[in-house]
Length: 256
Image (cartoon, rainbow, N blue to C red; front, side, top):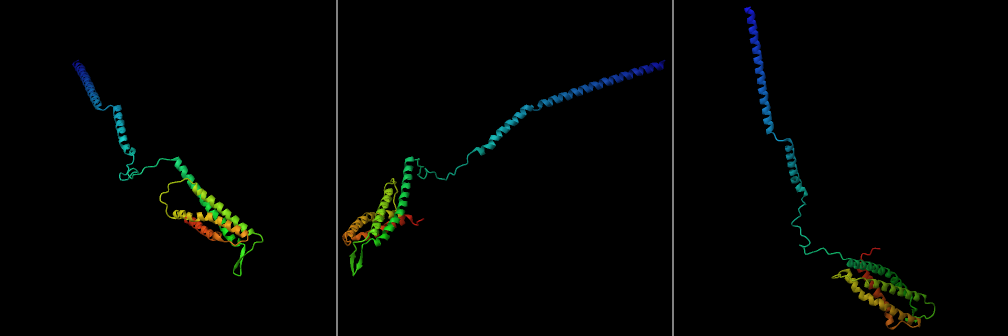
C-alpha cells in the first residue's frame, strides 16, 4: 500500500516536473522569438527605402550625363591668331547683277572681236597674193608699158578681196568698240601693244582702199599709177604687218 502511494507520488512529481520544464522552454522560445523580431524590425528601420535609393541613383546619373556630354557640344575653338577679312581691311563685295551682266556681255563681245580678227586674216592674205597680178603693165626697155586692152578679171578679184577685207575689219572693230566699258586699271603687256598698234593699222585700213581705188581708176584709164596712188602697196603692207603683230600680241601662242 505504501509502495503504491510512493509510486503515485513520484509519478505526480515527474509529471509536474515535465510540465514545468515544458512551460519554461515555451516561455524561453517565445522570448527569443520576440527579441529576434525586435532586432529585425530595428535593423530594417535603419535600411534606406528601396524606391528612394533607385531615384537617387537615377538623379546622380542624369547629373553626370550633361557634364560628360558638355565638351562634345561645345564648338571647336577658332584660331585666335587667324586674321579675318575685317582685320585685313577687306570686305566681301555684295552681289551686283547689273555689273555681272556687263562683265558677261563685255567678255562675249570681245570673244567675237577676237574670232572675227582671226578670220579677217584670210581675205587680207588673199588680197596680198592677188595684188601681184592686178597691175595692167609690164617693163619693156626700162619703161612701164600700160596694157589698156584685154580682160581685167585679176584686177577685179583683187579689188573685191580688198573690199571684203575692209568689211571684215570694220565688223571686228565694231565688237571691240561696242563692248561695255569696264575699268581695267593700268594696261600692260600684250594688251598695251595691241592697243598701240591700232593707231597704225587703223588709219592704214582707211587709206589702203582709198589709194587702191585711185590706182584702179588710173589703170582703167590707161595711165600709169602715179601720185599718191603709188603709195597704195606700201600702205597696204604696213597695215597688214601691224595688224598681224596686234593679233600675235594678244593671241600668242596661237591655238587653232
